Image (cartoon, rainbow, N blue to C red; front, side, top):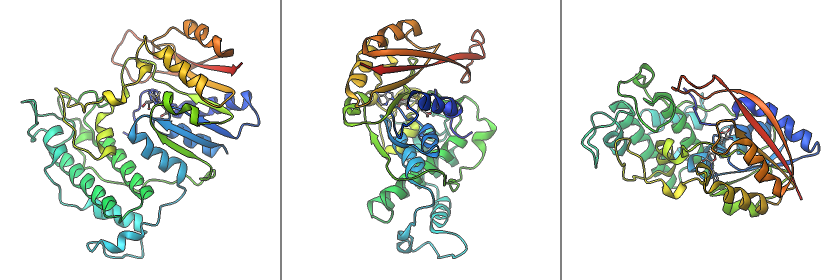
Length: 354
Ligand SMILES: C[S@@+](CC[C@H](N)C(=O)[O-])C[C@H]1O[C@@H](n2cnc3c(N)ncnc32)[C@H](O)[C@@H]1O
């Protein structure tokens, strides 16, 4: 399944990059302020830019480290300290570690109990069906071991991020969901019944891995510490909070054991609440970011389906500088609502600050 991420700009990256170059043909350093999967940041790197990328979600931080800071497998020199791993010169240390993690004995832990049909949840009577019991217990054993390897300094911080990235990608492949983790499906689909396997990631060798920075936190708070030629902002545009819709990935990334609340088993997520999902708070957040960031050009993606009608948003943004808006017709993220058109307009709003 790969990544079904609401609002991912994977397919629009070419258009957005040509817009960036139209704004400033000499642009070198781009801020990607709500970087999500990190795929747009990777496209920037592959097009020769250096990037300052940021997101409020921890899983994004790990994806960004993989996409921006790596062009080949890290060395994993610490494998020599894992007695169960037998040196094999035909494969590299990274693949040895993945093989070791894939062969761990499944454990009936937090994921098994909270997210699989045979588990016993801590605060509801109904077991959840995000994963088969086998896959949930594999996630438990792999997740626990990655944490142990990190805590014992057997893997470096970058190696740790790569393994978390790999576990998230493997989890996405077997999750029993319709797109996001907002809820699980009542019956296991075929994909979810396949076995969870960590697969070696493919490293991009295009573009430099130098000159990038990655931050974890709120754009409103960190924008003033960032500077660049163009600041790209890709905010949520609907009410659905990323922290609620991708709670399971966040739990993998944070390596914790939060209370799983309600039927969907959401982690307490208010600490990652986004103001961009609120009609009342969104203007305040745009103001803080646009005024704070050290950048003359701001480029914002927004959608026809957005909480704020595009004309209203454009008028609001005009107070910060000269505004220019472009329309892109875009294929809609899968929706069960048959009244919705299959395509929608995505807007690119350029602000040249006063
Ligand atoms: C539309 S998605 C970005 C998708 C991304 N461009 C990609 O291609 O994957 C919006 C992102 O904004 C992040 N976000 C929401 N509010 C934020 C805030 N106030 N500060 C930082 N990140 C925020 C969400 O976690 C989410 O990853």
